[in-house]
Length: 302
Image (cartoon, rainbow, N blue to C red; front, side, top):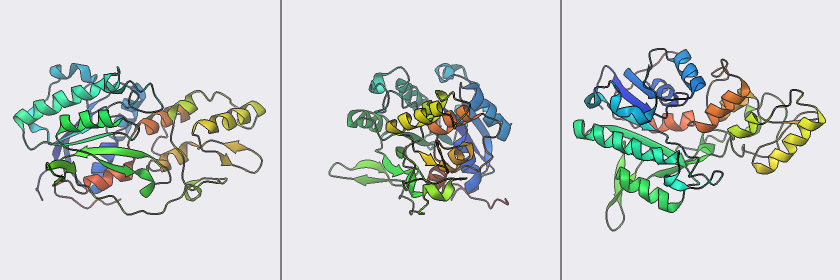
């Protein structure tokens, strides 16, 4: 276990800074936290919770960033999944957004030349093709582990995680694979985290941000609103039953689905909250992975 005053972190596609929250929660001190993010309300939420975050802007301009690259201890990346997902255009790593993965690789290789001990974590969707998973794995030099968020939360959310935090050799050719053990199932069900009402399923199907963006009905109990929710439920949205009507998950429930405190997104409206949480990482899964980081952990007083 390495004793340190604090680590330097570079988070690409930083979103709502789930990586920072997870590091804090497992007790790893941070010296500098650099964030590359372009979504204005994601930056707003990050600076609200972590005003010392150093914002760098667009990842395409990384060669102009004022960073001591050799000082970066941990590199985080959740490169865009839209082109990889079965819900997207499935253009794969050649897509306009998902091709940003290769900029992450350029940055990682640049850091490695100056600091061979840099640790990385890369996450992406389960819906990616085996071809794209293979390309990403060979570029990173390690194959991923697959973890479903349903082990620690009330939603089904399968994701791939690549990391050199903990690795082992596998197979005839000794390929390196990510060796983070899956967390023990905490048996958290959707009915357990609802603020009201009930559901007929054990887990939330999926957290889709776009459903909330297109949901413009102010009166959620109106016939048009109810018809909209019923229609959208056929595309993966989970219906919550109140006494005489149906609804989608509210802001508190969305935070709980990703493992955040109820008030974490109070500065944002429902649509922006759904956007960041829908694109983001599941906090307790990242906390689980970070428990294996080779850095001294300190006890936090909450």
